[in-house]
Image (cartoon, rainbow, N blue to C red; front, side, top):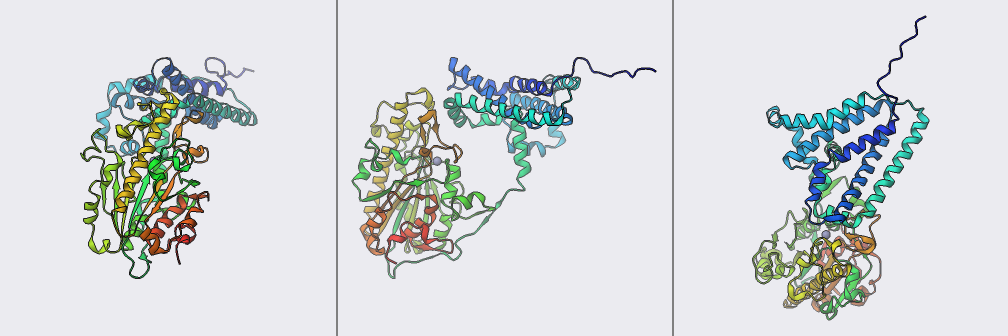
Length: 547
Ligand SMILES: [Zn+2]
């Protein structure tokens, strides 16, 4: 009897983990060259420290890539998956290297919508060479390797262990370089779209998931029954609502900070709440949430977008204007008059090339006078969106005359400054906000009628505690300093009298747990607006006013 010929490919059967590990090494080292090139061009990471940062980042990316491969490591799946990774990475590397692009959801939409002529324009021998060397070559090698068969139960255990080990590698690497990592990723957001080939997979996932997510094109109206509920014959009030930026409650002298960062507010008759929690840890997360009637929990689970607090105040008949000295209102002011002050050339506020927050008070009377008279007769609500303490270049937020705490970090690479210098630069921004708020109160005092100021920040900031800088960590793991925000109220005697407001009642809430969930309803309470969305139990002012 003739023995059956045993068909084997060259070489011994490979353990699947060896293949995933080799593929990971290849992917991190070669198709990520555009990322490594970009890193060497960054001013923040140079010399030995830069090298260690690069190594740490490479280990982190390797951990992330291998964790994903560990989940996909099944006998018939492994080679197709590795092929997909290698070819995606090769083409991604080519486009990033040649065109200086990064790969995000928009780019994937561009690719999907490309017509054959455009695609042909992109085809050239460099692309083929890149696909050949970075993609086809390792794929050719891969398919020639026999893979050792592993009983499925051991495969499950092996994959779980390899997944855990990969995640540990990822977490430990990022922890070791966190200081540089946080700042580099924030200053150069494009880098996250250069991690190859995960950038492509993530972007494709985003594009594919879009129809399943909420309908972002549609905005549900709110406050359609909005009206004013004020005492009969009440004089129209002016309410200034200052939307603070990156202000941590603990660095305000009036909140017990050991440094006197708020000498001017300390002399005003204000109430400062000390136990206020933000909705998110970034502007993009907090701002729309603050101005939503839903509150944090419902806002995060919402199935459609809604209009904002501004729309309700506008529908109630008030004269509403949004003045923005930052990067815009994230859509919440889309349907009311708004002004950006960032590009003004007003001396001295804009002399340093960037307009400091006081510019928002410049010609404010004129801006209000331009609002419809019939609305002004019912009341005025001015929102002022501060640049505040926006990092990492704290030193740019403050005019030279207000830099009381020295020496200050004058770089945006915070981790290269002494920690105390970072704190000094940050505290100078709080001291300038103190000045700005006091000037705002002074502006209100010039009006004889009822007026009030409400100042609440969007989120806090890390200033080097546990090597954390800036903000934006996932809420569940973010330190309290990123989530505790100031909430300061000044109320003119005329308004207090008109509304029967008891200041001691508000003062009693100083340590009460309050959050951005209270914001929408409290601003409504202060302005006297009411609608079906208004919830009295979340209005910190209403409960202290005469019924
Ligand atoms: Zn912010």
